Image (cartoon, rainbow, N blue to C red; front, top):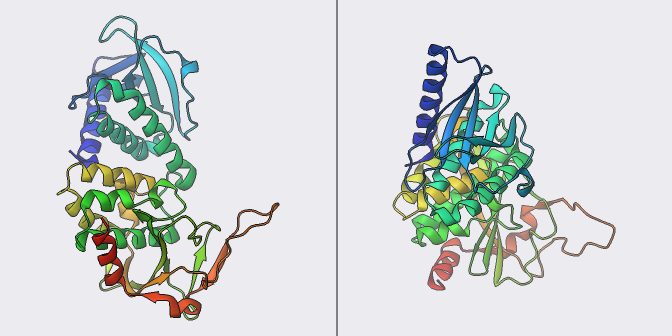
Length: 340
């Protein structure tokens, strides 16, 4: 179905509810409709009067109370448990309401994301799907906020997506490629396939080129079959290259050919801070000037041991200092594919 389609569908239904409530002269209360999606009957959207606030209603076990949930604190939104007379008297629903219309687009995006989740799981998996949804979006707000990615984070995501597309193009199984993307899950490393790890960095600096290492685990190969640092040197281009939207669109085409691939990609993109509603902000286009894959060995300059009392270790690595550890990308990919 896709999140874009669901976004449009939910926006249209909310507009209808608002118009109907005004036509009926509803002074106080809810106008709500069940969102008809596959495998799911307890998903309702609502417009609350007189504020005309948007609300999402998810039917839960009638024995549930507010103390059974640890509601996150999302800016401009609030959680509650409410009783409705549908589908039966006293039915309990989890309510997520929009308090600040400034965040309407993000609110609709996260509601669409949940609708996609619930359309794919049986009744006995609804609670776990809801918990995963709350965790995914809590991490989103903690890492990125609601206003889109900064230019630096856009470039970082561009690099990760470029490598993800490379995995697809090289013939790595589509679902393996998608599941290998760990950076979107806030893991220490960006990609892992059967213990073979790749950490992706982008840079636009002039010589001496540098990349930022954000913690001591990123270049620590202990416990891994291999660890490589992949550095993309980008050039901002006015008359060519690709935007973040371009590369996302190209990967969506490939993911759509994989069973469950498009949904998995959408979840990964949320985890990486990318929402379709922000694409108008991502107009910068880039060209990859160089693509360099370095094997991390004992000779690699890095910080892996941190004495007690120190933390939040961040440092810059001069790319030229590891030129003798350059690996052949095609040989690496062939090795990974052959080991699958």
